[in-house]
Length: 234
Image 1 (cartoon, rainbow, N blue to C red):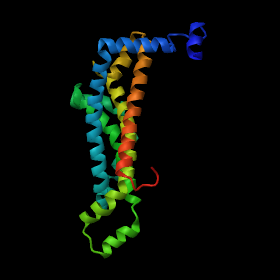
Image 2 (image 1 turned 45 degrees about the vertical axis):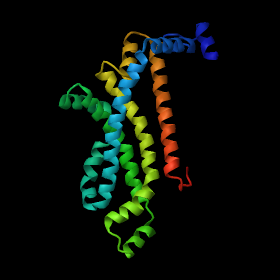
Image 3 (image 1 turned 90 degrees about the vertical axis):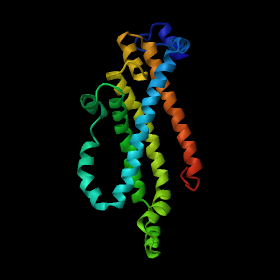
């Protein structure tokens, strides 16, 4: 490979950009020692918990604001104010409020997962066919029946788009949290390898995150195709 050869002939610094052979060797050592599995497990648990709660709250709030327009108008300003705040800026506050344990990490992951799911759910509700909504009103369907039979089915493709964005944001959130305050996890491994000048381990960790995120996205897309079989866009 050109990359490997460039490092071999000293055209590229192995410290700045380690060759694939060193990255693979670092991966092999981490796998054999079992350290990589422990770090992945720690990160995966945090991501799944934060992702679940953030996504659930995003979906619920998206429908609640549709059902209660006055509440939507009331929350429009505070939600718009909070949304641009980066997770890295909020994490020290979460540590101050919740401590340095697992809760603060899960909350910051939930925070970053919430927004894409919430915004896509809200947009999906707004894009519901108005003719179907008017027909339900003519047929005198109650609000709950209208939501379950018309709003939810039309919103599901949007929700899955939010879920796919949310899982990638969640991995970003866990890396930030673990780099700042953790003794395990992929983010911790990245920060530790940076401090120890182990660039091969650092690059290996980034590649592992990319692969995990990719496979989770593939799974979500397959589930989306099964559930949203009527959607022409899939």
